[in-house]
Image (tube, rainbow, N blue to C red; front, side, top):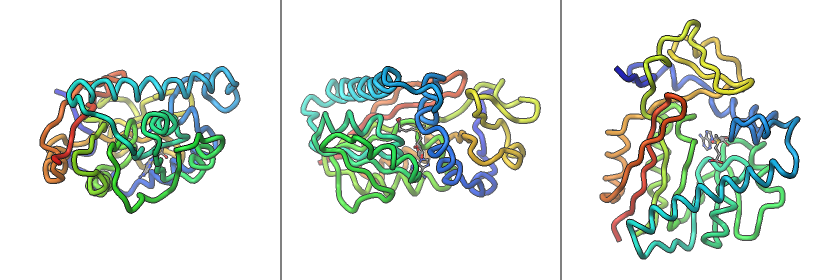
Length: 253
Ligand SMILES: C[S@@+](CC[C@H](N)C(=O)[O-])C[C@H]1O[C@@H](n2cnc3c(N)ncnc32)[C@H](O)[C@@H]1O
């Protein structure tokens, strides 16, 4: 059977200071922390790699726009919120697409990097702005936040979605059995990063590692439905046996 991590032991998961992990990752290896390709490690980064890095963000936003446009032909957002923006890989593309993009991240070190040569139309901050947006995007972020903190964050995000606004959200949901029975409980997810297969291993994971948490789709649906997002589309993601979903949807006008 497929497994979800922490489904019965949320309190222990909650005790992990993932914000401190991301501050550390943002300081030591911000680009590699976003995409674990060796070319993006701090010591390997060059102009060509940086171009490819930001191009991948353009590709992701192009793909999301295509899916939303197909489902909602009047899709034409004039503002976007990028939750967990990292170094601005997606925020930059969202600024180009909407003219008004705001990236939020918990890691000051990531934000420093994001603000360097940010294009016009892109702004960044640590707190959720007190305004609404036409499109809320969060990709490869919630999986790194303990669900007990993530669900209220999702609710706060949805409070910032304008009537008729769109969502593109990604969550990790479950994993292959081979990721649940790993000796020592540590799973390598790249050079220098590992995550865990059981809660006990969490205690031994040093600061600056990347923990991956699985979310409950029922809870996510309840939050989205309560926020007026009754229409949505789900697509499967499989990152080496870590399964999840992209959710595309729209809030009622
Ligand atoms: C794997 S990176 C993804 C960055 C970006 N979404 C992208 O796809 O390029 C995850 C980001 O989420 C941020 N993050 C983790 N926990 C967060 C939280 N509680 N609030 C906001 N951002 C958070 C991290 O600092 C990191 O920059």
